[in-house]
Length: 180
Image (tube, rainbow, N blue to C red; front, side, top):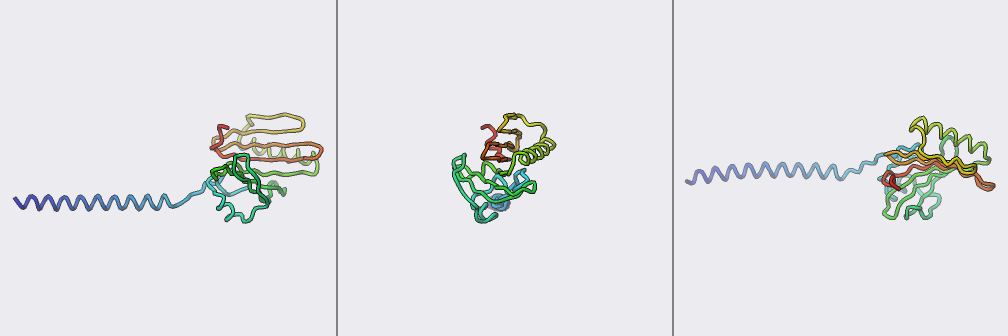
């Protein structure tokens, strides 16, 4: 009768060791995949950062910001100088109150209305070639604007023309904000 007990114990130990080995392998796999942070770049032509980029990662990547102010999302906006379409402008990184990057925008002020509208038309044509027709257009004499509502995040192109301001902004919005 002792022999069956010995066989049972040997079989039990082999099974226990195999299960322990498999659990250890599973834990190691989970550890290495969970510890690696992958940043998916935003489909945006003027930044290589992703929606997962934290504020500290932004500073590490781009250095000291030009200015900072309250974001419309409840957090902070950090501005950096940046070029787009060979024009020097300002890139804005807007965070919400939880530290999530909600929008990236490039803003440009033009010296005159004609050059601003030329730039607007060029960017608009390129966006339409890539994403199709916009789902929204203000068609206002002093305020032009289009919105491309995409699953990967909305794109908002707008122009403001007044006696004192001639500005264009293109914003890429985090898909978390698609319903707003």
